[in-house]
Image (tube, rainbow, N blue to C red; front, top):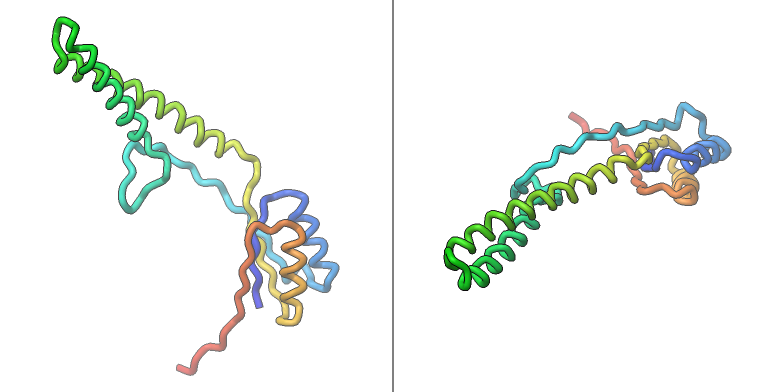
Length: 157
């Protein structure tokens, strides 16, 4: 039987591995694999099948709408009229909203990237009667997630 657990790299992981060796598992039964960080590029458009949750056009559209409405309202009393001032407000609002949203989104992505917690995948091979004890030990040491996999015999060919 295999038990998979994910941890944030730190003292809880080390103590969990030490406790697993105390309950009778050897280091041959325990595998810890640190996962590498992936880099994320900032994209302007979210697509239907590839949305990253960091759309920068929402703020630009909101600011462009506000700028256009303000341009139409105040353009009715100014020289060039509401249409020209509405288009100018649309362009200025869209550009300022795009720039502001770009800065905020890039800062949010950089803040998430600066986190020092590297995820670690822990794989434990144990007997079926040890599975409950292993899972309780991993839960006690703050595992982020657990999964159990039992080998199935192969069907005859």
